Length: 360
Image (tube, rainbow, N blue to C red; front, top):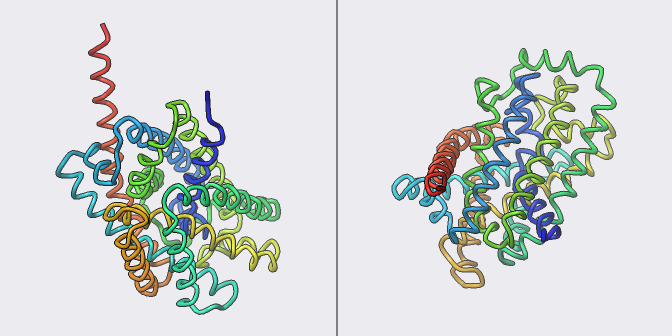
């Protein structure tokens, strides 16, 4: 029997994981999809299919193979040599992404309230550190509640903006290719693939361990449908809102907040808190995947590691403006993530062939 509470909680945590600084601020939607105009919609459909497939494969592997660490996951899918290389690359990149997340939090509070960047980044660092100390299960409980709430509020803001600016959508989609927008990929066809590749180093470390906690294969299938479909719908709505207002948002560090300000200036400042929480829901599980690799929860080593990684991310958050930092780091991770995607596909094809040979 399907455990719907578990399915919805895990789907919520998966959503929360994906809506970090890139999605919550609108920078991912701008750089991966809006920059390509109408083709961005096709890219999002590709993204949805690949997110569903990879989520299912990773959770199923975690449940069947008892994969306890991200190194176990990468060895399983990518082999002993490439798997170890990807393990270390992923851990380094997760710290870099955490710096992007803290920079996003700082930019959000600065744009909304004029709070100094180091204060905004420091506040996020403290909140993430406190949550990391709770461990995986309690962390999933927190993220499972926050994730759907943030998606809903983001959809509301984007929908209000669409309602006010829908007549400009066609012109905005055409104009987007003429504007000097920071673009994550040179061609729209790569955007969906690279976006999923961007998520894989993180979700490949998290989802197998989440899958190991699930009761049935059917529960895993439902999570692999519900989570990606919801994130796909949310991204489609945000893309539409951004294209309809492209000239007023494409240069903003926080495009979603620019949309909110366009609908209702007071609401824009309130929505900054929503974005801040969205960043929190991603940076926390990301750093957990590194901490859990080297130390067990509730130990002194784990707590010291949490503190060290948080401080490193905090220092890195001040290196560049948020949009430039994201454009520098995220696409490169996405292209490396394509290696993981290819490895998952090859592994599944080999397993399918092996099963077909055993059937008389």
